[in-house]
Length: 202
Image 1 (cartoon, one colour):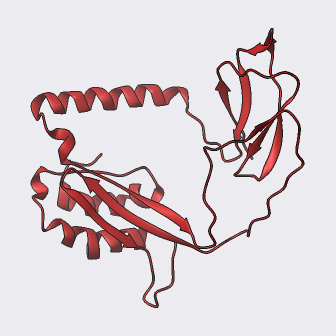
Image 2 (image 1 turned 90 degrees about the vertical axis):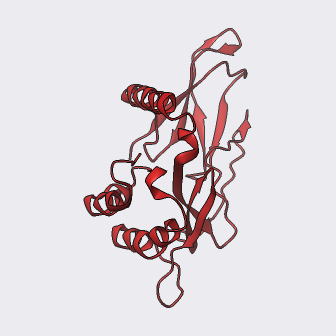
């Protein structure tokens, strides 16, 4: 298990501080070195899942921004030609993912929240662009049961849903953006998308 530390600027507390982690449903004690009653570099345990911004991310983000600025210099409405796509998970038991929400307290309240280990959830995909929304697409099997996304199911969605929807638009001018999830970055997926978008993949 790896832990990521996220620096916080100027946390103002006296005495020990406890932070609630919704991912782990636990309270964690925070140690910090103080400068008077102002903490210059609190280190807070953010996630047990290794979510952190790494040093190399800065260069990658900068390269992307420079590339996008160059594209906009050539085609001023370039940003209107990008299909931004992603999936979202909706828990059917009412749970809401609050990974960016924290409750701060000066005393450990000794509170535990019980949640099911594997609650049923629905995965929805859509793509947004200046011309509107393509989707939503609900990942379900032939019997109508909710299923998780893998490479084969993602490619089936692209083939059977996304590409037919694109036939209503001028795809020569559109760029397709997706994150680096395994099912998105698989060679078979990229090859399938290149058949439609060529090199216009982000």
